Length: 514
Ligand code: AHR
Image (cartoon, rainbow, N blue to C red):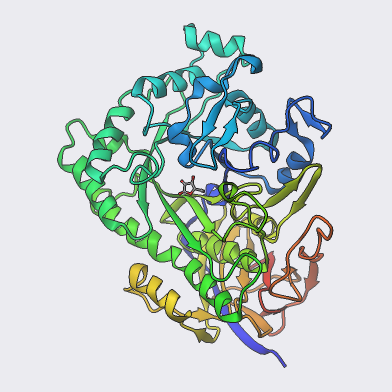
């Protein structure tokens, strides 16, 4: 018999609104994400509109992706936007230095990306080039995209087919400028950020949000020095010009994408939960300079990073995606919901064929990964009011040595343990949505969802990702090994909802409350 594991949800104890952007995605010019994944060119035999694949748009549309970051990553600080506009045949051929010296023919540029965003209904988030660009280049890109009046740049946009401005609100001012984006120190970057920011203007009612490069991993010094520098040398409020601070956290790997022991399963899931410590720690430093939390904390790259699949180019970062990755996604999204007052955007890396992708695409085939199904399952949380979720489930592991190491780096102030159930909860229009993960590698649990000072009003809907194997994944030949089950209607028993969750299972419980 499986053990009963209790979780308690307090619908009246509000944390904050779940910013839909925490379900954001990221598309870099890397491997077969853009070329082959999103874009095949007009003349391809694969069905497309202006080169953008129909099957990919059809698969992604139901996810209602709120925001999509582009064109990098490291690629962004080597990208010159003028290369990607105008007639295709005039666009220059460049080398993608960061990602396997691949040929970059620039056939996918600003207009093509915007067409993709429109097809998906996603807000664009552009990563500007600070590392190898100039403030003038970035200024011109913003004007080209956002100006509705009469100027050479706005007219050039019109002659390239976009009569209306793109109104891009979110602009990253560089990417990983402590590394691939220029190997800078935090104070130097703070100066560069201010300089570039001075030339990023509002060309319309759209108020541009300039997003600064945040720390990597546990580099707290980067965050402290960046803010301290802007704060102490804030002639004219340079701090107020920061429209967001974007950190990166990759939980890495343990074993490989598809081969892992139970201990490695536990290790990776424990490391994924450490994202909570990174966000908490970073926000507490920011709070010293921005106590009103006017500057949004963002995590614009996160996810699992496994060794590249055998037979694939090393520069392409292609990896399979299993039930373990689905759990990484679920645990991380639950952390974002539970930190709804702390984190305002998060972008999983990356959309297709690269790192922890939601789709894998090969020639004319396109499949959904287990991670896709978690994003789908968790959709009702977007924009809802996050409320307190407390797991009383049994603690079964401290994560092992590697996770303990993480704990020392990020979570030193908190007791860290993997429980038989982790999750989050949110309320919208009298409907409570609870999601939970069973991270135990071998034990099936009966999840018992109780409410504190509230009752379920009647029948409740449950949906599960209930794999029969924690190492399962989807392939082009067997695309539905891992998928969501059909929704079930269940009657609460003794005031609680019960759901059986196999190892690696993820569930959503949703219903009206009184
Ligand atoms: O997502 C892959 C790479 O990881 C990005 O280009 C970079 O920003 C990070 O190091």
